[in-house]
Length: 99
Image 1 (cartoon, rainbow, N blue to C red):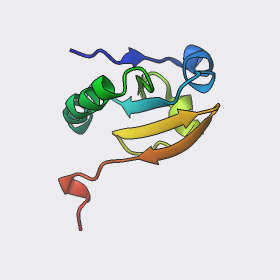
Image 2 (cartoon, rainbow, N blue to C red):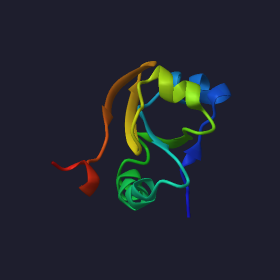
Image 3 (cartoon, helix red, strand yellow):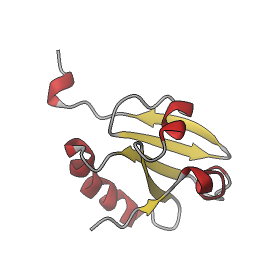
Image 4 (tube, rainbow, N blue to C red):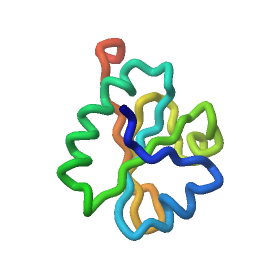
């Protein structure tokens, strides 16, 4: 079950950039196996920080402009937004990325 708030290009400013708390955004794709594998781990963190941090997803195929604007080139990527700006990103390394 996906209980992440789905963010679209039109509501990104209101829901993410203007949010009063930090927002962790998972840039993903429904076909992305590593994205789906990451979601249960994020859910655990979400339960712990429910009142302090918002969690959302952006489907890159539906919002390619957002991915481009924030330099998202690999999925999954987590973006941490606060005070109207991208503060940091994290892209988990998978087996195919290892040297």
